[in-house]
Length: 429
Image 1 (cartoon, rainbow, N blue to C red):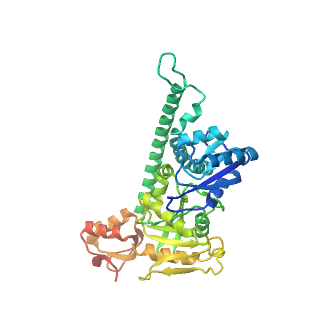
Image 2: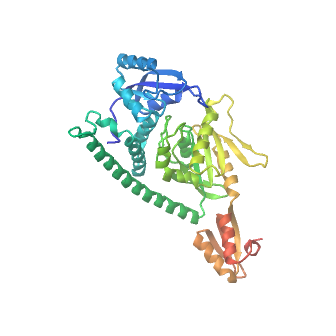
Image 3: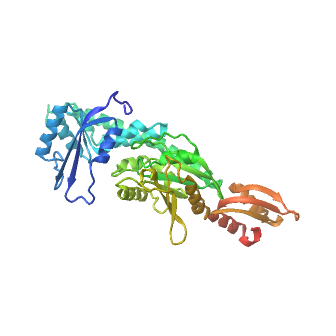
């Protein structure tokens, strides 16, 4: 039901309205890209400005007739609005224009439905679609009588609606249970990585900033990457070897976008948790995009919504090959720490600088050292093995255990406290 697609692109008319009290105004360019990503064939873009949305049609009567003329002339099959429409506005517009009407949320959901590949991804998208559909269910039954008061005035329409609402509620509960199970499995995987002292670095950023291309270049993976919005939906984890700190887990995640539907953020909570619980975020930015600064703000807003705003972040300015004077480099703050690195994932420029920056930022919180454990500190030695922090073990001439360990500094300090010993007692000179 949710993943069937037409064989050819549908002829679409796009509508973009600016409102006077709108804090940030933006053009229709991104919405045109969205519609093309969904497989539509946009033949016209209707723009305009209003004081506020019309409660019945969202747009004024003049714009409504202008759109209707274009729909008839171009034989358009769908009208796409770059805004969130209420169910009644969508219904009224469809009745007047005699064709399907879809708002921005519905369009993004449609793209996600096309892109989802894994079972989990499809469940997440279907949940968001069902929740969106539940508010618009009445549209499908307007040909039936609605329930009215009085004897002999009760039609079958309301009964059918109630049946469908019940089926939707049951399906939503079933999907939610499955996603809870997936969430539990992801939590278990994260705990396992934590026990093995392997830091997690998560790629985040605006859609089409080049995250998957960067992921492939850094790890040698073959994740699907394309110059289109939302090419990646399903998270991918790969091991990345970084000098000085060893292995880290690199996670490629779904891109963000302006006005990302809240129900989508909620449905993808298990996926986005990879970012909120990461040790370091790589915020990938298309440095050649004219809307670069606005895109950074949108990503920061979503990171705050998913509880990832406090995670240490390195900004990765990608696509320097599109700049006239783009050169790979590391920008450092007043303390000498990297806060921005300039790369081209497509051309493979600056990947070594990116790895160097990751090593500096993640390595601050990782203990990579040799410990000398005496026979009376056997409990501490056992804790280190239980934590999965021991890389190798040898014995010195005094019979003491010499361990090469790698683990987060906070875990190391907790183990010392539990064993009742000080750092000076075990650190090799």
